[in-house]
Every structure is written in C-alpha cells, then in structure tokens.
Length: 232
Ligand SMILES: O=C(O)CCC(=O)C(=O)O
Image 1 (cartoon, rainbow, N blue to C red):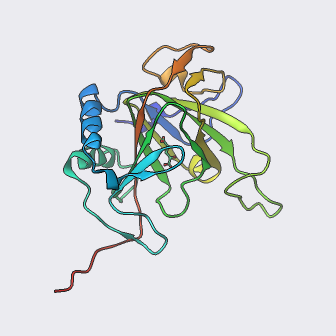
Image 2: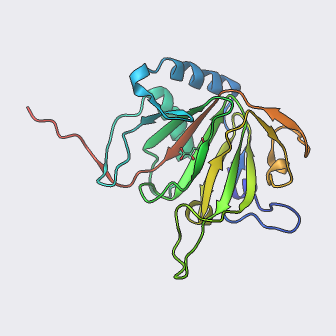
Image 3: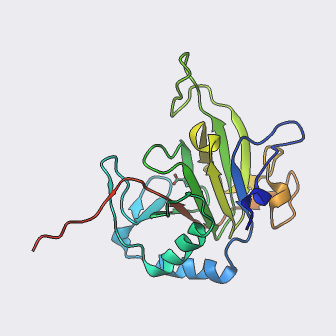
C-alpha cells in the first residue's frame, strides 16, 4: 500500500493541510469491528480507567517517563497491531502499545499533544461511530518554544473519522498541533473538514451526523520500555 496516495493534502482550495495526515477509509472490515467490540465488552471492569469524559484501557503497559513496564498485548488485539506494523510507519520500530478509548455521544477529549513518551507517529482505528477530530496550532512564545496548551487558540482544520477508518498523524501534526474531540452528540459538517474526498460515504456541508458509541484504538510505539524482572 502506498500511503502517500492517502495523504490529506488540502484543507480547502486555498489552504494546504499541514504535514502529515494520512486517512484510509475501510482499513478494517465490519467483521473486524464487531470482533473488536465483542472483545472489549469482555474486558474486566477493573481494566477500565474512567475519566470525566470517556473511559480507557491501556494494553502493552502504561507509558511512563522512566520507561513502560512492557506487558503482552492480547492476541485478538495484536492482529491489528500487526496490520499497522505492516505499514512500516515507525521505520525500523514496531508498535508496542494500544490505548483504547470509549466515547459515548456527548463525550470527547481536550486539546492535547501526545508528547515525548511516544515515537512521534500516531495511528488510530475508529470503530462503531464517526467522530470529528479538531486541530489547533500550538502557541509559540517569543523564543519560538511551543506551549502544550496555547492561550488564544485558533481552530485550523478538522478531519472526519468514519467507522473502520485509519488515521495516521506525524511530522508537524504531531509536534506543532493540538488535537481534540468536541463534547457534542451530533456533528454539523462544515467547510473546515478537509478529508471529504477520501471518505467512504459522500457527505455535504450542512449534513448532521448523530454520534453513537465510538471505540478508538490508538496504536503507537513507546521507545523506552523495561521488562519485568522475576525473582525466585
Ligand atoms: O480517540 C481518538 O481518536 C483520539 C485519542 C487521543 O487523542 C488520545 O488518547 O490521546
């Protein structure tokens, strides 16, 4: 697969999309999507971390500045990690961490960057419902240093994530932009969405999409890992 065929290049006829966003519709099948939902349904309750606006599970370990204590990724999930690894997006490295987020309609995630704990490439598979990912340029101070949370922020562009799609973010979209998901129950499609042409479904500006439960699989590489030392 030549990923450059899937690169989102323009926000509209005037503005280029900053490098680099790759959007692949139908990256997984409906059967895969069902399988993911049924496996996640089986996850024991204590595996979940409940936050105010979503809940999540870490697989592969918990990323930490001192190094992630590596844990085995379950086989059903490793299938999708391998599918991402086959795209060679982490160069010679392999993905070793999956963050599962579950969003109910009306839930989202605050503007943030993924930061230094990860190799700077994010891959996200969307299951169940669409969502819209918003991008905001990070503020720079007088010395050109980036702030992780800007002051006056400007919404630059949006990417519509359809069920079963894959989004890859890297380069300046990893380092210089915050991403977020609005806490709304429906999305009114607007002219800041820059990937209409790559979408599986034909959409038009003004369409209203109702959100359902969305599960996202964010598959990344954590460079600093440690193995559990067993003492007998
Ligand atoms: O659910 C998503 O698509 C985004 C998740 C995300 O940005 C994160 O967990 O850091």
